[in-house]
Image 1 (cartoon, one colour):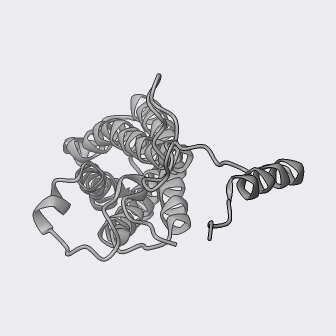
Image 2: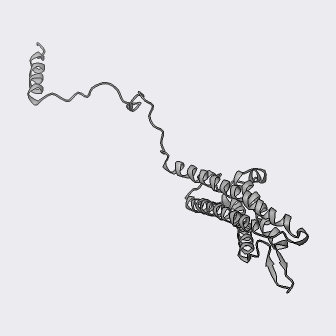
Image 3: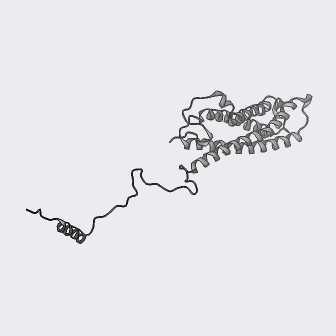
Length: 228
């Protein structure tokens, strides 16, 4: 099945244009999601934990290990997903099947919307845990933990934006699928015309047998033998 131009993409087999690729909105938003995910899980992983007097690590988000694990988890998965979607954007123009493009767009739409929701939950979770936390000694990890909260908040909008672009792309594909494949006749236009070789002369059927006999008798009556 030819997927040329389906779901907002170019025709399959077209030469790759790197400039057009990096300027594509879906690529830009996924790159931003990738950057924010690195910041979120990187900040928590580097200075989100500290050892107590017994040498046991604890999470600086109110000593709630689940808070740190949640922030790292959604960040790592978002990082991997962003790489996967960027690779999918690179291959999107090469997808010759309309169904394959449709499945990719639906996957992007579903994952982006769901991850925007998870980042919203993570932002609320980390903010609540941080407000209940005691200030770490010597301010250890404060900037990192606050940055993780801030970029969790920003990630809500980047993933929501990614879902929006995916929805617009899906809408384009749906409109194209149900668009008529023919041009409608203009209102008040002329109807179908006859063949160019056709003439307006009516077809004349031969006369009835009696009329033919009368015509033959009149012709014989008018014929006269030559005189000697």
